[in-house]
Image 1 (cartoon, helix red, strand yellow):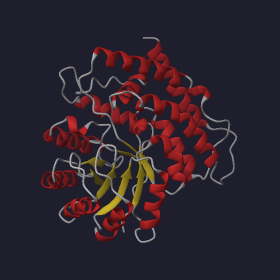
Image 2 (spheres, helix red, strand yellow):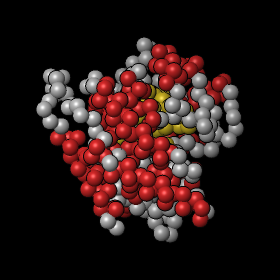
Image 3 (spheres, one colour):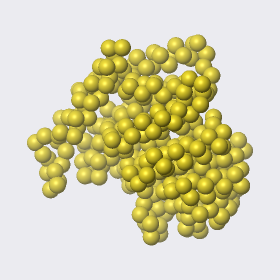
Amino acid sequence: MSQPMEGIYTPNITPIDARGRVDEDKLCAYVDWLIERGVHGLYPNGSTGEFTRFTAPERRRIIELLCSHVGERIPILAGAAEANVRETIDACDTYGALGVRAVAIVAPFYFKLGPEAVYQYFKEIADHVSVDVTLYNIPLFASPIDVSTVRRLALDCPRIVGIKDSSGDIPHMMRMIAAVRSQRPEFSFLTGWDAALAPMLMIGCNGGTNATSGVVPELTRAIYEAAQRGQWDRAMQLQYRLLPLFDAMIGQPEFPEGFRRGALSRGWDLGQSRQPLSPEQIQTAQKTQEQLVRILGELSQWLPDIAPANATGSPSATSPASDDFIERVVREVMQQLGR
């Protein structure tokens, strides 16, 4: 029985250079920065990575590059969704051979399918790939995956090892966990909705694939670690600190432009998205960035006045990891303000 995927997997932004190409050097430097700040895994070629805006060869090159560069430092959950079953299976096998921990496959998009069609789609893939598969439920953009379908796939397909759910629906997640975990305890439940990270961990999720972790990896990790220690008051207070930052970034009209602006506020100019923006949209994005700089600049007042648990579970007198986190973020934001 394999171990479940746990912790915060960052759906990293894809850097673009001035000529509109994937900036490989900056991508490597950016993921090094994320790893240094404690993310537990990477999730390239996801929605935040704008996978539909790159060609299939570009998507494959991104995974090849990251597998080579990251090595054994942290696991990679690779987005492998293509437009049809055959191409998706090919992508899965390619990524598996490159060394990813698993692949994430979104339910069929463009065509809205019912539960039986969704089941057959994933079963066809799971029966023919050589790598572990994580379902990806994002009903905003693709056919939804209901609880009974998740259960059927979990019980019928050993290659399907988890689900990333971006619906933000807590009762839906609880129903999935109740339907599957007793018979597949190694099955991973990952939330993709940052606004509910702490509550999702509280009800039993193994971790998250959270876009804000590409901007404040220290904060999302702190929420996860507080949850692991059973410090739910701390986890929820940190969650409330994360909420306005997430709302500002997700509220940007053209996703994931707000998260690109958030990364820029931390000192990472990851270039312009391939989605063209009007002058009015660019102006809105700039205002969002100013708001993000203000929010990040207030981080020194964000962390709650409670200490993390020590090894015995009782409060310790100091919290050096949290203090280091605040200091680093404030220093980087102040550098941005000085430009």
